[in-house]
Amino acid sequence: MDKKINIMIVDSLRENDSAFNVLFQNPELEIIKCESGHDALKAFSNHEFALILLDVGVPPARNGFKIAELIRQRKKSYEIPIILISDDEALVFKGYEAGAVDYLFKPINPVIIEKKVEFFVNIYRQKKENERTKAELKANLTRVENSKREIEKNNIELKHISKHDNLTGLYNQRHMVEINKIEFERARRYERDISCLMIDLDYFKEVNDSCGHQFGDFVLQDLSESIKEHLRESDFAFRYGGEEFMVLLPQTDIDGAYATAEKLRLFCRDHIYDNGTHITMVTISIGVSSLLANKPKNPEELILFADKALYKAKSEGRNLVERYKSTNDDPFAGDIIGLKNRIESILDRTKQSAISSIEILVKETGGEIESHNKRVLEYIEKAGKKMRMPKTIVDPFKRAAILHDCFKHLMGQSVNTSNVLSPEDRAILESYPYMLGELTELFDFFANERSVLLFHHENYDGSGYPEGLKGAEIPLGARIFSIADSVVAMLSDRPHRSKKNIEDVISELKTNAGKQFDPNIVEIFLSILNEQKTDQT
Image (cartoon, rainbow, N blue to C red):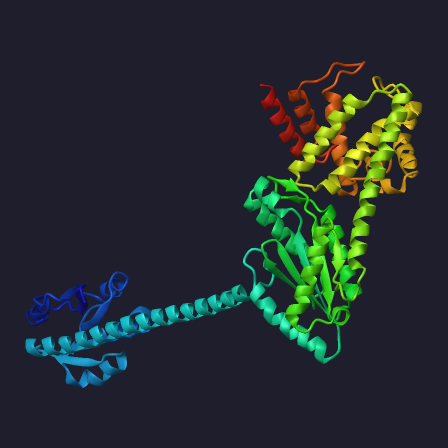
């Protein structure tokens, strides 16, 4: 022990001092001398003692026994050994009753007092050593318990990591093999069905290339949550690898699996991925297979069939759900695929031909809308690229913009919007979306375009018309077209005002973000306008 050991001597008689000198000469001891019981009790607040030497004749009232009792009653000094000093052997038992553990008789023999003090000091040392050992054992036990808990926690995490994909939280491919085998064999044993979905994000590489892999990871995480939300508790979702996912649907036939896949596809088609920095839309393609419909020989073949169906969905244009069907089961499958592609091509040409015919009609009636409309189409195209939307989604928005300007001219705009609108003018203006919707009903294949024409005057805060739609209730194409049309109008000269510069247009968009316009899409157009401003300087 580095510190000195404290010994208390309670004695006011000088006759014992010579015997105590042997203690004062010991360099390992710190002797605290008290001449009264009051001083002795007070000393406990500042020191820890290994031993107390107490003369029974100490004041007050020359009653050391009373002082010994008081010492024993205090919690801090209860266990400190007390050696009473007296010249009367008859008082030994009274001393023991007061709490003493040993006695010294006067005159004090220096050798005896030295040996007695040495004995109790050794006991004190052993006690302190035991306390240190106990504390170390307790600390070691605490460390062991903490280590045990940490190991258990790590084991749980390792078990989770061994089964789950680190990025998406879905089951990983390794666990997929195990679950697929278990569920496949269970379905076959009990003659139940099981279906498999293979899911792939369309054009996902372009998202990573244009927005960065951090945003790409955000899209994968968001999609994973969407997949889980569309499944039952008994279903299993896995990250197959990269941007591919696999879903197992126990006790689900091919039709039920197709319905689940289609709901998920439609949700993803309209879902916007926005992390505050980038915003985009990404469609998915899905292949579907099942045990009873496709009769795979083993669990691996169930996945293989779904993967082949996925490949078919991607080869036919993506954003599709396809069921697996072998060529042997359906000898005309190849011809049907080709026929479907040809019909879709004819339908696209039919749409374009219809629009061209309407444009010719506009020109025959003296209309000239090409300049304004061309610029609106350019902004829609740029917005679509920044949002990473596939051509199949952007094209209907552009066709809607063309139809809007054509129909608007053909109907004739009798409302003067340069002044405050009269009730009659407002009624006419607010009826235009319905008129546009009615005209597009003449063409069944313009259903997607019709929603843009009907709702492009709706405001993001719900204050627009004709239905007072709000936020995401407004079709995405209508929200994009509304901003594109407004931007081109502000950048163009009008009879009642001059065109604005790009800075003013940017300020106007910021002011109306969250009110008239979707704030997320405003950010896209601000980026386009800032790039345009840079190109002009």
